[in-house]
Amino acid sequence: MSVAQILAAKGPDVVTISPHHTLQEASAVLAERGIGAVIVSDGGDVLGIISERDIVREIGRAGESVLRDPVSAHMTSKIVTTEPGEAVDQVMEMMTRGRFRHLPVMDNRRLVGVVSIGDVVKYRLESMQSEFNAIRDYIATA
Image (tube, helix red, strand yellow):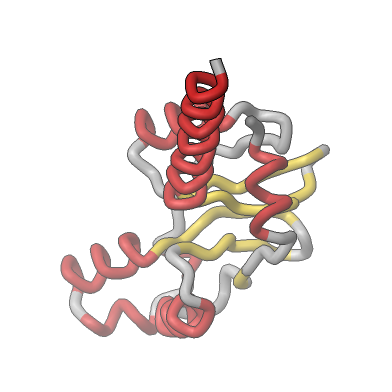
């Protein structure tokens, strides 16, 4: 099981925002698209990531005026990435250890997708169900 299999099911859509956009604009993108994080990009280069949690944390710390700040002031710039060939179990471990919910997927320094912890858990549950069904069918026909 690899990240590529998750991306194949999700599709290639990657939402990005420029670093000069405000947190308010980033919040609107997150709400409109129904996603939990957006990649901060400038001319194709991945500069960081900003999540719902990041925005809420900043509002709690500094108040609603922070929504006028540029995304670049609050994004996570030291992001961990993965590759399409990475095993899903390895990705789940990285996300759990790093305590983050979104992981950009890079292929030859090019952004090709984003996987969320929800994507990973869904894929693992489906895989476990398939394994269970195969074992049940084997036992039933033995």
